[in-house]
Length: 64
Image 1 (cartoon, rainbow, N blue to C red):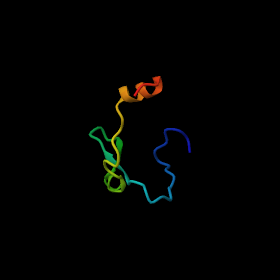
Image 2: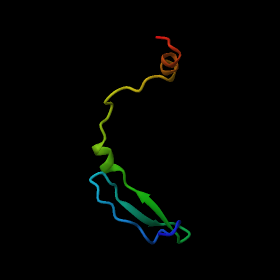
Image 3: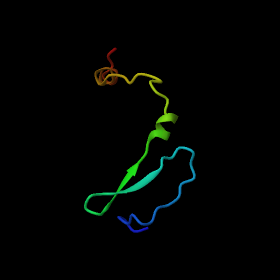
Image 4: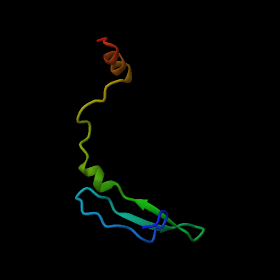
């Protein structure tokens, strides 16, 4: 597939995909839009908190 060619897309065989649409713009060109609602339903929300950057730096320096 040539780079930049939006007319040729490859099929993906995965359960975690999201549909892609091409919607017309005002100038007549098409814009690619991806619907992430299905992927968001698969995501595990707030499973664990991310550490603060300052805490990570202290651990690397030997602190804490």
